[in-house]
Image (cartoon, rainbow, N blue to C red):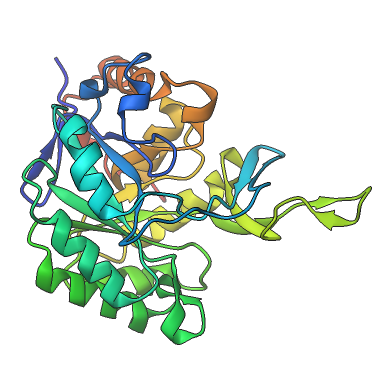
Length: 304
């Protein structure tokens, strides 16, 4: 038997396969298709302090080898999550993380404090691609200073695992990763979506109501892979890789580039069973290559 288990700080994962926030609902939506407990972990959709209706339709568009989304963090707020959703999903025998979002540092703190009280939630993923309304709408994750400041404040109030989800819409993602590591992040996940847009040539209007949106899917994989490799070589904390992972080969490439774990996102919309298929195929790959532990290949990229 091969050992697929990995660790982030003191938290154990039965395998490195997780699902990405916003693509897997709260897990229970997939109960008819897979045994969620077979996964290393799931990250539930973005959760904010108050109810958000999201952006007007249309807010999704198919693109070559990918998709654009501008859903806008639609959710019913953290209190609704705690009262109605948490009691249903705490049954899972896997790591359930909550993706935490906000428009101000105070918003992030308020959500994190509430999630900190939930026994069956071992960690949060900070979405620092949100616009900081106090700084003119610039995303927290686009500067070392703002990324570090939100991480520092959350570390003060949140006592369990903090994963910081990094934005790729920057010139030096490694520096931002180092800045959140210095302020107490236990791990970083990358990449979030790339900023893109789509145009209707017949009407000469944007396809999305918000004009721009987040690009995900196979089209972003080479960028994501490069950024994971750069960050792995810049920090000492575990890196979680995501961006265009459609199958086990993609997942293994990210692990070789330095990812301790991976997240499956857009692929869930195409095949609701893809995540557990990736777990099985990683195991088959390891057996075929006589690899006893997944840790043997994390960051094993041969440059020379």
